[in-house]
Length: 146
Image (cartoon, rainbow, N blue to C red; front, top):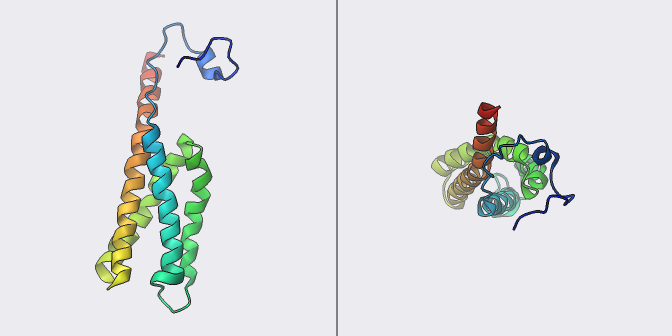
C-alpha cells in the first residue's frame, strides 16, 4: 500500500530525500514480533526462575532484579525503535552468557532454565539483528550516495 503524497503520516526524512528516490527499506515485522516475544518470555523466565522455579535460596532472591534492564528495553522493542533494539541486542548478550554459565554449572531444573535463557537470548539477538539490518544497510547506502 502506498501513502499519498499529501498524507501527514509521511516522515520529514522522506520529504527531504533527494530527487533520486533511494530503495525502500524492507521491513521485517516477523523479526520485530519475534524479538518482542522472546524478550517478554525472557522477562517472565527470569522473574519466575528467581522467585518460584529454582531460586538460589528458598523464597526467592534479589537476582529477580536482573529482569529490570529487560523491562527498561521492553517499551522501545514493542514500538520497534531501532536505537532500543540496537542497545538491547548488546545487553542481551549478558543474559546469553549467564544462561550458558548456569546451564553448565547448575544441576537439575536450574540448568534446564539456564539453557532456556540461552535459547531465548539467542532468539532475541537474531530477531533484533534481522529487523535492524535492512535499516542499517539503507542508511549506509544513503550515506554513500550523498
